[in-house]
Image 1 (spheres, rainbow, N blue to C red):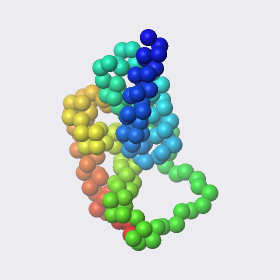
Image 2: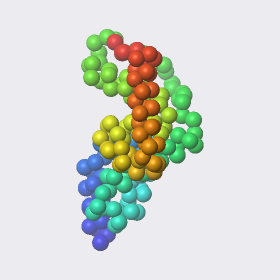
Image 3: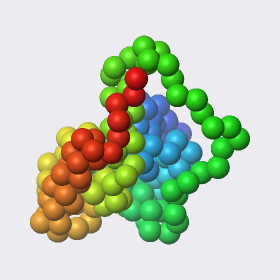
Length: 168
C-alpha cells in the first residue's frame, strides 16, 4: 500500500502543483511566500487523508483546505506591509505585455478584498465552481457565499475603476 499510495500522491502533486499554487497565490492576495506555505500545509493534510480522498476528489479536498487555511491566516495576522531591501522601480512603458499588466492589476485589486470575498470570487470565477460548490468549500450557507461573491465582484469593479491605475 505504501508505495502505491506514494506514487499516486506524487503523480497528483506533479500534475496539479502549478494550478494549485496559482489558486493559493490568488487566495493570499498575491503573496508568493504565503501561498507556498499555504499549499504545503494543504498537501500535508492531503497526504494524511489520501487513503480516503485519493480515489475520489483530491483536488476538491485541497481546494477546501486552501480556502479555509487562507481565511484562518487572514484572521490571525496582518499581512499588509512587507519590508524590502530596495524600492522597486516602475517598468518602462512597453516592457510588459498588456496581458501581464492586466493580470497584475487584477491580482493587486484582489489583494485589497477581504479574505472571504477574495476566496468566493477566486473560487467562483477563477476556479469556475458553482455557487453551491463555493459555499461547500468555504463552509458557509449558499446565501453567504453568493453575498461574498457579489460584494467581491462589485468591490473589484470599483477598485479597478477608481484606485488602480493601469501599468504603462
